[in-house]
Length: 422
View 1: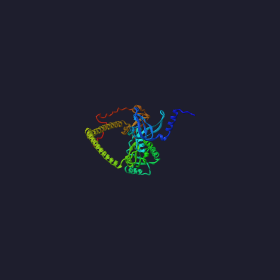
View 2 (view 1 turned 30 degrees about the vertical axis):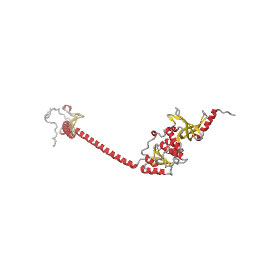
View 3 (view 1 turned 180 degrees about the vertical axis):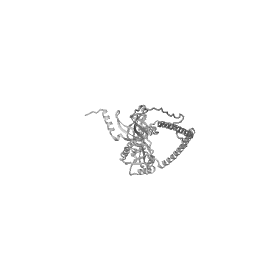
View 4 (view 1 turned 60 degrees about the vertical axis):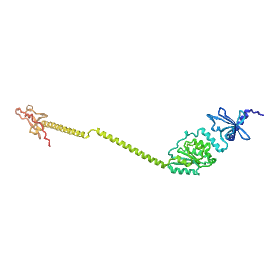
């Protein structure tokens, strides 16, 4: 026979209790008694009815009790508490570990709603600081709802009227029943995976709390919280409130109102654009007038500071006339100089002398310029203006005769130009 230690038995019993899924998530109703609130902030009490009682503990967290519902635990107070059943090994006592308290008489679903709301709020899923602004002009709007209900039709009708530029992408899913929770989660994930959705509307029509319960589920709430695309919750009627409303980036009282929230009104936008265009036109006209006036002032200033163009033109014409006169004078002088040179060259031309009746006498290649250079009998060549003929020096004694050279008048010009014609 095996003998167990007390610790082994209590530990085994604790594991049995905590492995039971039903006992790990249970609601128990009863009356509070023996309430104790030590300095630690924990609340210890007994939950009893007419026939039985159960030890309970409501442990504090940082900053105070687990949540504000701990204030409901008072002696004689009838409550419905949520928590788990386990064994307190130190005393071997069965104990109810409470995490949420609701006044007795509230429905079970409502109590579960309040419990989940308090816990998610404490985790920060409802913080306004994390909620995102909706796009002003969405191009693609995702819708998570049933494809057979009137909700999708209403959303399409409103968007067609207000913002027909947007494309509507439906991610169909059951919105009540056992397939609703995985369906809503899958639809949200599907739209997020696309990467081109600007905003998501998640919702359904009105109904009882049981029919709306898929949008109170913790997994759906966390899927909305984890969406990379802003989510608008549109569940039920205006008076219906779900956990999804608190987690979503915006809450709409109805699906039709959600369509109005996510999309601008094209008529209103057209009017605003018209007003803006008119204001812009007025501003531009005023700016143009101001700039035109400034340009005109600067033109007038430049006109006053600019030199007299006509006077400068006259000066240019005068300088041109002077330059032309100087050029003409220098040209005439150069022509006269060239003419004088031509005249002198002609005077020195021996062939011109031949034209006047003179001849050139050569003996071989030597020009006979003196009687001493010719001996009787020498063969000579005589060149006249129209050719050359041969001759022979006679036998007489050579004779020399002194010639007088005419001296031109030093006062007479060597070359004159005809007068310029007028």
